[in-house]
Amino acid sequence: AESPAVHRKIYKGFFKRTASLYAFWFVVLSPITFFIRDWFDEGFLPGLLRFLQSLLFNSTFRASWYLSALLLGMLLIHALSRFLRAKTLVFLTLPVYLLCCLFTNYYGLVQEIPFFSAFRQGYETIFISFPNGFAAALFWLALSNLLAETKKRPSRRTLTVPVLVGLLL
Image (cartoon, rainbow, N blue to C red; front, side, top):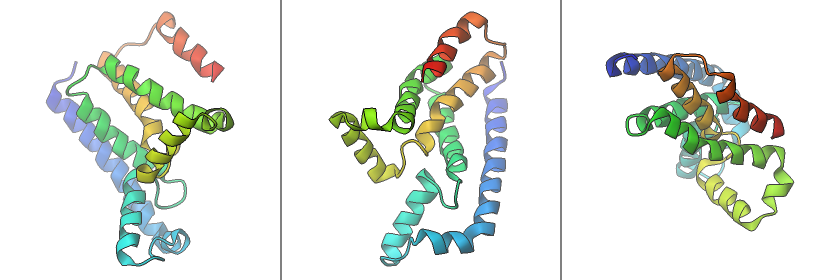
């Protein structure tokens, strides 16, 4: 396995490249984005808060949620990987990903359950979008972290359950 210093260097490089890509397209698309999003319609301070909320937890320009999700998710997984094993991270993030799938693919079923409806409303008050945000990325980033740490190809037996669950969802 790589040393922690090498691991940090790889993460840092990937994070910088992703942040640069996000920043480039944000600058290029900012005139259109600020016009479309109407962040500052209710004044400067509420607009600034809405802009920062979108920047950190959702998306600024159209279809940028995956870049911000990748950046925030990488930070979270990297920080948590210092305290938790990679397999534990995968196990803990799987239910979050399954909730994202249930909210998007089977919206009517889960949304009708009061607990899930209240959970989603509370979550989206802060993070704007549950399915299109960093929560959806956490499982895949944790799985990538696990694969990077093990550096060996998973066996068919190991992959059978996740593939079957994925096919069923």
